[in-house]
Amino acid sequence: MTFSSFSDMGFAIIDISELQHISKIREAIVNHLASQFSLTNCDPEHFLNNFHINASIHDDVAANAMILDLIRGISGNYDFSTSIYESITPYLDELIGPDVMSQKNNNIVYQYPGSNRFSELHTDYPTNSEFEVVSWVPLVNCFGSKSFYLVPLSDSIDLVSRFKDRQYASWDDYKASCLSKAVHVEVNYSQCILFWTGLIHGSLINETNESRWFLNARYKSLFAPFGQHDPLTYYKPLRYSALTRIALSSK
View 1: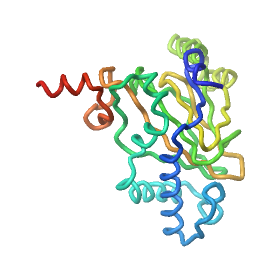
View 2: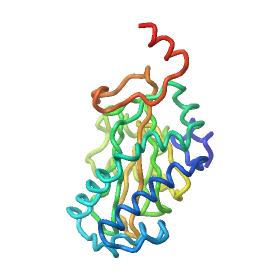
View 3: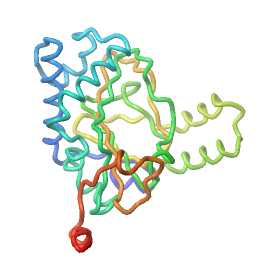
């Protein structure tokens, strides 16, 4: 699947052209966790895939506490939205233009094997702007139930419309219809998924024997609607075009 598929499918799997920005974050995560849990800092892929075993993370309370501590521990040195943007700039510029806003907060998602903290199917719009793109950046190779699923553009629009018209007898019927159309994506470290906020998506219980790790960030044009989020608390300006800088400086 190439970037050109975004227009037809509402999502695309792309190769990260400037991987060093993501590699620095992954290295910082491994170093922090190795220090906090007194673990040997080895190959990042092996370390993260097997973290649940070596750190004895087998319940969601412990997993959530670990993630919150991790985000606090490295956020002073890394801005994920900026790093992801710098790693895939040409793709984001083509989608949203040169005046860019991103989410403010760093976000890491972790799911150990068997965890019940999977993401129920949903769309990010209308809570998020419909003029917004989501980046999903795996820190390990993700496949099967270790990854997540997306319902392609035309199917998502049709399913949401039918749901709003109450054409399904129950949530389970709606969910079954969505899953029957879903694409279960396989995406490796060094790749990224970009998808529209209106796509139905979610994840399953991780039934592999490896931990799932990924970063995500959201981007929109400075001049696009904000959705239901408070623009002053959820978003931050990431980049201004030369024209916008001139206009702003004249005020």
